[in-house]
Image 1 (spheres, rainbow, N blue to C red):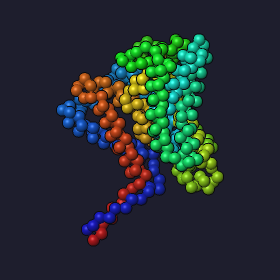
Image 2: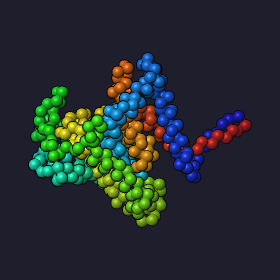
Image 3: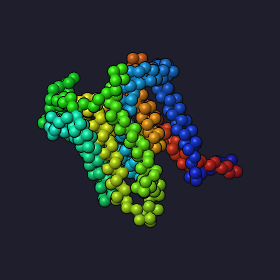
Image 4: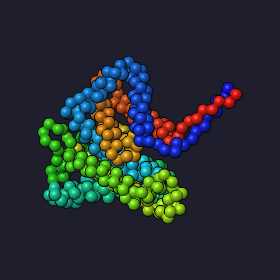
Length: 362
């Protein structure tokens, strides 16, 4: 008997199957990483316990998890819009940095004497516009010149990172911190307020913004004409073209939204956490919120509401990375989580959309 494999697309994918595959993907990722822990001589059960307790087992840990989840959530929501249209924006990291640059310029050099009522909204508007421009540029290159957006958005991350370095080493250079240059500290009117004492560094205006964006983006994608065009463009480009939908308009729209939201995340980081512009590797923990948000988006199945939960999960992993160093594991082990989860989630996505049929021939 010789087996013959055939792959067929599933006509309908139920939400229950999607949920089951997502959970199974997570479990398989945990099992895979457990073998890595064993290779380090660490009991996987103990390691997972330390990660969970460090991230969710105390008020301090949970508040830090929310702090890490905020930029992941905002970037992830923006990426979901682009991915829905099959536009693969890998540039959220650079768009986040551009938003941080714009907010810093406004806070330190444009209207530093303004009250918080004027200064903070101006920083968010400037950050959104800067991130949007950084997203629209590769969008135009894709729509007009057929340039691969994966390459162009990725390369623009490096340009944004180098621009930050130029500014903090050059015209915006302030004091030194741990051997790295930083800008001067923002005026207090440019600081985002925190939740009451005991809740850590949760800058609640950005948290409220992130949750609101999740709801509004879900409504936009599922209940508006433009959102319908985005979904059709992603699900059946030929049908979208036949119906007269503008490919150029859709690509520019999703890259504007995606880049703009990542820029908002950058504003939240400099106005809510650092209160200055730092060395690019210091604006967010490795591997970078913009890159990690790609995995958050995939795990959330491009659903803005589900991304709220997946961002909390990955925020917890980033916080848990500090806890596992105490038991002899490097912080880079968290990168293993990210890679393993992405690998199994993408594999699960294929199994969700397609089924494998085995026929035996005698």
